Image 1 (tube, protein in one colour):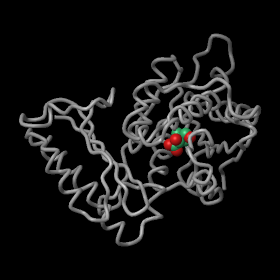
Image 2 (cartoon, rainbow, N blue to C red; image 1 turned 90 degrees about the horizontal axis):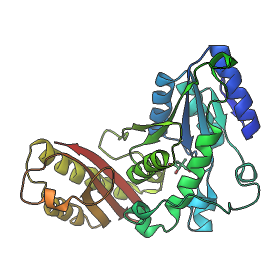
Image 3 (tube, rainbow, N blue to C red; image 1 turned 120 degrees about the vertical axis):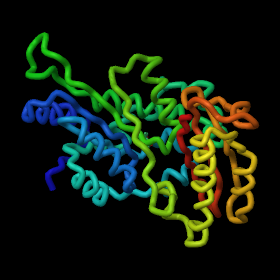
Length: 303
Ligand code: PAF
């Protein structure tokens, strides 16, 4: 394996700087993850490797973003397999710190407050989740920052710095972008499209918990999104109600929300969806429980 594993921020800084110098690199990419990697994460890594000279992936199961201790304990830890996935994509360095490295004084006293956009959709059923996620993302963006100017010379240009987030977690992506803009983080956030299995199911670490029947039932989510996308592309009214009815006709699926929202503010675009042809940009968001498993999916609309 060519990939290197480091567990402290000091090692990360030294090794990423050494790699940048060794490669004569001008850019560094960061792929933040919680491990349990699948093809969706591989796509994040692949995109980062295509666009940067040095790529760091982080693997850290962040206690701050879990509501229940039991969910945190149950979260799959698959470091060896994860390293193999990242190595195959050409990632240079993996930062896999322990909780004591990231939170040496216990839970941080000062945190990121994700604000009103965090209280809806996923945030409505997971209070505090996005504050915890943004707090660790802020830390990871600092850890992953390229350490030295190119060549180390005074006045030399700083390396470009990019961080990669999946569009699957659309609310997280919108909040990360907002945090980076509002707080002037010196990083470009690069969104990476959802990866789907051939039958349309969006890849997720949670899919492993679906039975065969539940997995089949879960396909209604991407089908319903596709209906909305097709209508937007055809400049027709979106008719969200009939797409909702399709989801609700599936007995194993319990719909939580299905809305078309503004991709930047996540506010519903309800009026744009009813009787008039859809115009502009939107994001169709869906969340449902399929058996015991909560799934989310979305599709960007541009008409
Ligand atoms: O999307 C994830 O895997 C996590 O929320 C992230 C961004 C790595 C922060 O813990």
